[in-house]
Length: 307
Image 1 (cartoon, rainbow, N blue to C red):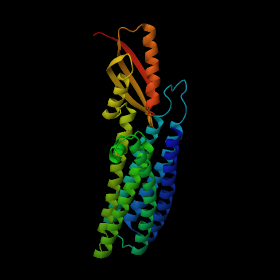
Image 2 (cartoon, rainbow, N blue to C red):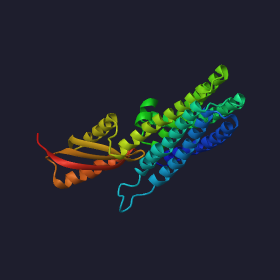
Image 3 (cartoon, one colour):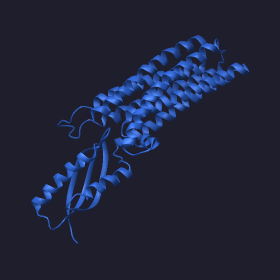
Image 4 (cartoon, rainbow, N blue to C red):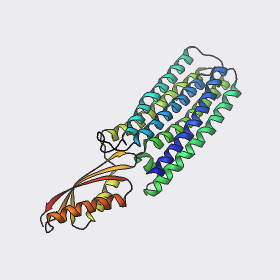
């Protein structure tokens, strides 16, 4: 699926550039203003940038062809590196943000320039918005091709890269809003407590996103099946093949982004000879792969059928 791979690479590249620019702006603003919420957002942006680097690595490693040690290819490497990114980089960002917020509560410092803080958060939101739109467009195109709603596809997509970018950018926009509210309350009330609380909330947001992304990638890595709707469609395609009268067992798992492995026990018309059954099975496997670009490998195990 080269076109989809190119789309994912483009999405990650846009996100990486946007997040690096936002991270540098936020860390400078945090140093100048002394805002705990701004420091938390700087950690957030650097966590996003580190995550994008690992996602690029995931994309590269998962695209390697099958070899003797990996006959199903290296597609699941995408989920491994995406899992590392979620639990490593994001978790570190969450811990640093919460720590910064707690420090802000105990050592309250006045913000030196509210104007700079608001300006940097606005610019960062624009950058995050550009990246979010890129990820949203890719997800929307894929959802339309698979006849899903956008939210269904966001939940069920087998591509950990674009899903992670969308989640990160959405969280970045929410984080900017939280920081802006915390800073505004500081400006209105004169108390730095709201700034520290905002930093803690940013950390909690990062932790929540990390957990959600890690859970999905972990489920695929341990062999979780594709959605019931997709299994149902594949089952109907199998039964539609001449000579196959029923599917007695069906397992469909992802072996990489947009790469499904279908293993099925099928009941065959007993009137067919052994040579015909073998020919039927091979033909059916090829038909399934042609009809669904998601199916990368099919293994049909024939069983006799009695009327």
